[in-house]
Image (cartoon, rainbow, N blue to C red; front, side):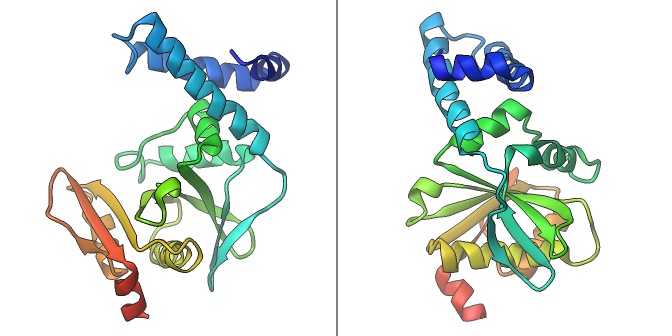
Length: 218
């Protein structure tokens, strides 16, 4: 283990618990049949991103895009409990994965992911949105996850419109895509209503919107 990371974990019991929990989950899951060498390689990789996630964390609020009622801002480690509560919300849990703290910190350090919090303009957090594919954003970008805790007020649609605006006007990606489970009909209807085109259905139904589609709709 990196000496700097070892020092941080020794000084912060919560980080240490999160790190050890994720390593155990990996060893007992994906890494069950891995050799000790393969596990060590994974720990080096995971530990590097975990350390970056901690070092990149900031108390500063970094707003990414603002709409009429909502703001999307960059997530921080201090948002982890709220973000997990959104994922575990009974309305969301059947459709989205739950990231433990260790995984979330690691993805804050990854160049591939951008985790964000959706807030009302008054600063009240109501959801999360995660992009994946930041290293290849000039080719395509995935809207990995979107989940909110206030339903039936149009926030989902506005958050998706803001996500599109950020993806196409700020990041300048040519192609934004997402996936959902086949029986998540409510989400699918919102995706279609906000300009996404459904690809051939399968158990994890996929949707996309291009920069040209976005500009034409505007």
